[in-house]
Length: 126
Image 1 (tube, helix red, strand yellow):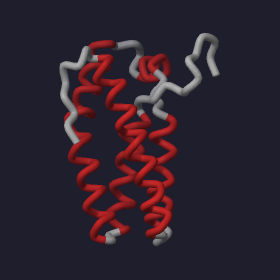
Image 2 (cartoon, helix red, strand yellow; image 1 turned 45 degrees about the horizontal axis):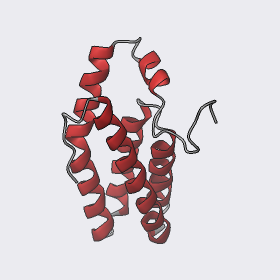
Image 3 (tube, rainbow, N blue to C red; image 1 turned 180 degrees about the horizontal axis):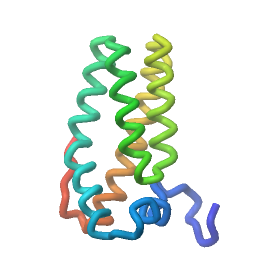
Image 4 (cartoon, rainbow, N blue to C red; image 1 turned 30 degrees about the vertical axis):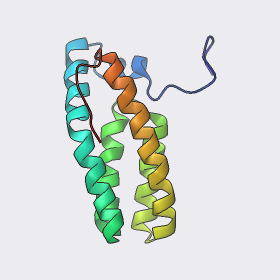
């Protein structure tokens, strides 16, 4: 844990995120806005795939989410998306349902932090 940390991990690593885009803060805002705009649909699509038992689709969607959150160095979200992808691709509905709960929580933490970064001006309704 970093010095001065409050006792929980931040949902993403802003320093690493900015390093990945060479410190371009304007680009950072565009990426955040794009993610926040797409996030509700991504979660809805995954929820629908899980509800319908379409583990093949769920695995592909989780893979896409993994890439999307990876750019932010959002380790917990990334790990949860990877876990969901693994469970779905392995045909394990029980594990997929379990990991879905974690991923949903982590994505909500991430989007809240990203919205705060933008001053709350980009809504992300679920």
